[in-house]
Image (cartoon, rainbow, N blue to C red):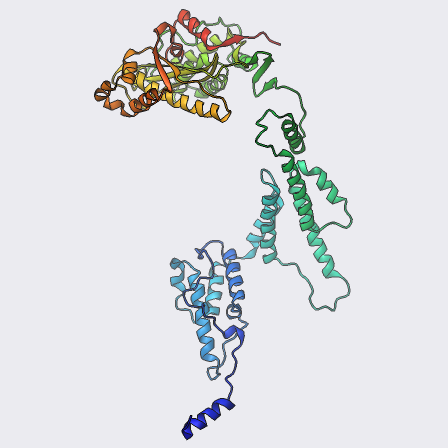
Length: 555
């Protein structure tokens, strides 16, 4: 500067040095009132976790002293007063941003960040007693269960950290103690955590658990975790199966058995013979499945041991409704019986229609329903050894039979769909189900049944494809309703059947693609009739013989 005044100012500026602010009063370029300390604002719940997150964020910004009272407000005459007010206001805005708008309205007029923090703790910081009790209970009861070792240890560590935050281990930091109490306190805490971690492990880790417990000195909790994790990873390596071994590798089978034995201590009994009521018998030609013992238990519980066997599952032409007769005084026995019959249906497709009809009246069963259920049990009494046979040398040829009983339900006039699908000679899928809507003609009912059957065929073809079993196309699709077949094969019919639009497109599209080939069969050869109506003894026996069921003598 050339002026005298300028020279004086320049000289003063050279000789004078501005006082340097302490770190906690400095703001960085990115600091602004709209900054968020935590990702999720406090909504009135889990104050402790939110408080911990805010404390960590403020400590990282060297501003924690504003809320815990360490950085006190300077005198108004001090040079740093205005700066302190500005930084404290910044901290206040950060805390308000970390609170939901619903709650923050009540704290907008607090005078300082310290006062805001104290008000929040007073209103939402509950007594530690209940929380300490809950944490101790959770720590004592936690176990591995279905979790892997990593998940189990992380969950347990989170509980420990929260408990340590509330009830920190008392450690002397003066450096003058010579009794070693601090070291003992740390060792005791580590031992308690180690034992708790080992107690919660599954029984399959007994080996490594015993190995850790006999170590002297005891390892740290982190070292013990690493040892257990190493065992788990070794098991996973042993279970790995290459893509070339798709279930027929004996080495893979042995590895799985070894892994299951480590988990549950299993015993290899060879081929399965009995499982959850299913009796299995193997031969060079296939596998036979029945539920003879389960069936006889049902007969005995119904006190029908000496009853005369029935020739069909239901009386011929029987139709059920919800108005005739009175409601059973004890419906529980009916519900229990129908539930057991549903499970028995796994190996007895011949009772599918009967069980479907009886299961409609679970809520309010009446006397005719109970009598029909007992009739079904009498039929089962005469055929206890019947079961499924699945051949080993089946060709990949699916065959479908589809049928419906139009307006069967007397209460709603809904029709019933029934279908059965064979893989070569083995029955692999069947279903009996009431329609969700009323059909205006028998052709409509039949066509809706065809739509359901096509969906099942698609699903089965996908499943077989996953096992690299090629499905031969087109699939023979047997139906005894000529009108339904004409709708499939003749596009002109579509103009008069718009109410069947969805099913028309579904069935016809797959017919055009060559996936199915509809065939008309006489009613006396329609196997699906078994799943839609109560037949007389002669046709029932004739169709029943086509299901591939065999009678196997007790072994």
